[in-house]
Image (cartoon, rainbow, N blue to C red):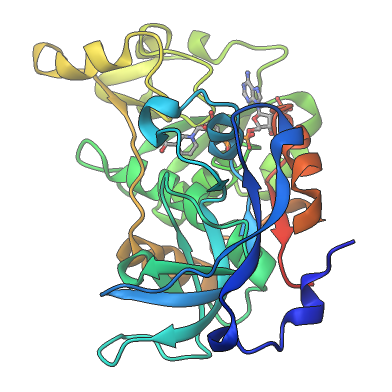
Length: 329
Ligand SMILES: NC(=O)c1ccc[n+]([C@@H]2O[C@H](COP(=O)([O-])OP(=O)(O)OC[C@H]3O[C@@H](n4cnc5c(N)ncnc54)[C@H](OP(=O)(O)O)[C@@H]3O)[C@@H](O)[C@H]2O)c1
């Protein structure tokens, strides 16, 4: 079995190749294969990171199976992985980072996280909060940024706002509940019965078990409905929004683009939240983490070699919190 810890002391600047988990064509989890690829070399404004851990997100399997090929293109081999934590190996003279700094960040559709090294724009990175492990840091950026950036849409979530979060037990939802609470909102969280106690522990004020109750039958009391798992729609959810409330979803389904483009016609708004890698926003998340307002929940850790097993699990849509791949164990 390949073990990256055996080569962790090998000097990167003597190396021309690195190990990475790649796909060479679209398909199932079995397409993921460990391969030697060229070492990345940092361009202007970039730093070279030695990756310690990579977080998993549903977008990883959607890229792997080809359902996002219009956005990602068809270039192979492709290294998946949009969330990373690691240590800066090489930084330019004017960089705000120094070799040895612990950093984390979100990468975007180009991926590159399931590998030993990565060259990345430093604007996408932030220092890892002191007490966060590499694994915890690696699973944080995409889920936390999706929540935080969604709450900035449409005038933003304010202290005292009433927000409903659908999919509160998932990779996005667990951060959304905690960030909404950190911003001072009253949070109604939707999850299934088996996750009720877990979601309560995140700080939700009220919990709706979606297996016994349809949240779209609640009173029209919400300033924001955040559909973290994109299982509902603007049409169904607008009934429970206040007059100028907003529905925000993580996927542009059920005519959401149409409703967003025609927002000027209605007082209730609809938005698709397209997340952007932004170190500046990640600094806000770091601050919440440092103050103990946001905690990280990892359901399972896999070595990088077992990325296919991790993909099988995340594709079930049943993960509680996050999954992580350890690149250095
Ligand atoms: N726009 C963007 O930039 C962006 C960013 C991040 C994510 N996304 C998308 O957002 C979606 C969610 O991402 P994620 O990371 O949170 O996924 P995830 O972690 O895989 O979600 C799994 C969780 O969803 C819950 N769930 C499943 N079906 C549900 C339902 N019908 N109602 C309520 N909860 C349900 C599951 O709990 P139970 O087992 O209890 O049902 C589980 O805890 C994905 O499709 C992802 O691609 C988009």
